[in-house]
Amino acid sequence: MSVRFVAIDFETANSFRGSACSVGLSRVENGVVTERAHWLMRPPAGYDVFDPRNVSIHRITEADVAHAPRFAELFGNIMNFVGHDPLVAHNANFDVGVIRSGAEVSELAVPAFHYACSLQLARRNYELASYALPNAAAAAGWEITDHHNAQADADACAAIVVDICKSVQAPDLGTALARSEIALKLSPEYVPGETVFSKATRDAMATEGIYDAARNVAARALPGPQWDLWPQEGTNPEPNRNADPEHPLFGQHIVFTGGLHISRQEAKNLAAECGAQTGNRVINKTTILVIGDGFDPRDLLRGEPTLSTGTKKAQMVLERRAAGQQIEIFSEAQFFQALSGNWPEEGALSASFATTGAASR
Image (cartoon, rainbow, N blue to C red; front, side):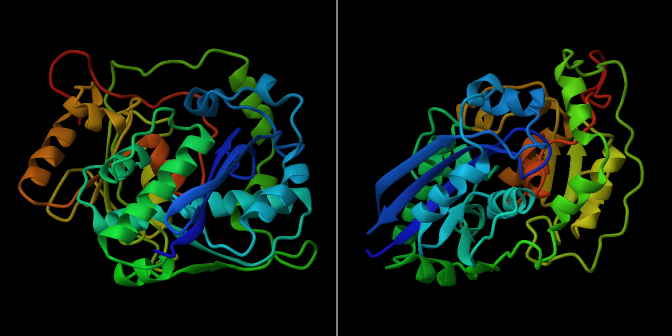
């Protein structure tokens, strides 16, 4: 087996995807991890506020990186490690976006490179309720003991790709992608001062006070869910037909349940911008259920009952999956990462559901 690639995973400090604070890389040669690299880093100056929501996920604090090099200082090491090998990441649009946005605000040139997405490969080759990294890794026979440690997640990503290459009897990554009907993608060269900034960077630069807002959030405890109100469904906007058809949400039919950090209407608007159709209830066309209120996809692996998976919509999805309908279950963090972003700037959870009476919508 001549399978060769570099698996990569970034963790970010705040809602801007260029705010990398950690990276893990795993080099695969002949289907085996032969080399690893893991760095903590300070995000680019001006984009280095640590949002407590991100910290609650990866447990990296501002103090942890206080004496670490900046993203710009490590960028050469990262790209030298990658070399001419294709990159692979779980939800690659996000990690490739971290490279691009981090380079843009750091005024760094980026060479063109090829990449693939282990999430896409998992969807084509596994039958799972959730394709979150721990679930897909488990399907590959790999257990993540420290999820959201960048090195642990890069290793898990590598394990998924190697397992799929074996299962489809592919001698290399390109063949595995072709047999899964997925194309190897190209991230174009970025030249400071010549290439137009990515949308994520333009949006971040246009949003005044975004990082001051994050600092204000960090200065106080985040409020918990408001359990005494129902979330308001709002309207279902028309999908953006001009959205990128390669976007992971394009053409999906999405339903939300539980409380999110933004209103359900805002979540629907964001999904529709990416070409998704949203709905108020689970139907035959539903392909994704997004569960708020701190749902962790690893609960599906452990078989543990959670508050969120006790909602009517979640119960209906599990029943429909048992009957053969393909519906994927997302956590809120997965949803925002699929948007090629991270957490929204709002600090409080939207209303969730009543503690008494019927289960949540």
